Image (cartoon, rainbow, N blue to C red; front, side, top):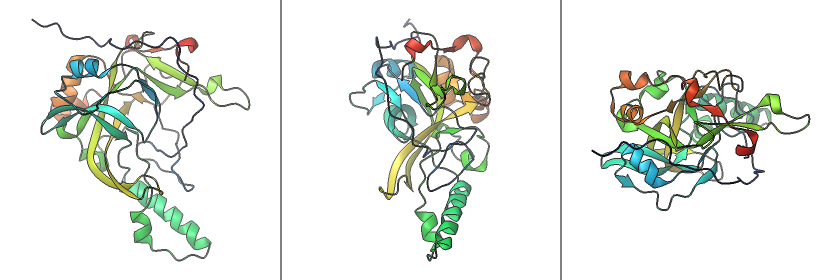
Length: 287
């Protein structure tokens, strides 16, 4: 009898490089929107930075992915919104490990509100506005994570054909309590334990969605993904009191998320048990 693989394949490098890059504020969370020419994060935003230092063999083994279209999958020290990252998804040909763009389609209501604000701003400057064209070309940087899975916008993607799991080894949240006066807000990093073993977010993916991600790109068609959030556990709450990602902690939960009827899979949208998450010491969390 073959032993069931465990969720502990990744190892951290001796030292991670110091990053000077930052999120440009182009992405939003759930069903909220703000606009000053770009998308902006609002209070409910959670987990817009993670890392994935494991390997594709471990990912395939745990998720039973039979197809791998990622090529040579390199470790990702920093994964930011709107970039390509590995997910495991259901496809007609079988379970696939694939690189997909991070940021699900935002709701039509959010885009309408954003286009309305843009139109109002242009009219104040005396410019003529074709609102339908403006709405069509309104940039949508993507919704990185989903809380209200029963909303009309998200219900269409509840089926197993749109579910995915997102591999990671640690995720970050800004820690306001650690901010120095006049400086940036440092990140607090979280993982299963200090060795940062492989774990998985529960997610949705959407095939071949046409939208304007960035004005300079124009209309593009891409596969998109994002992951679910839920109430924070006791480890997460001191840093982010409103939410944390939905983490699948074992192979059975991964299989349930990828195959079970919605009502059964929906029950996995709950906080990770406190004993399955740690905040990494500063020396292990440089990013």
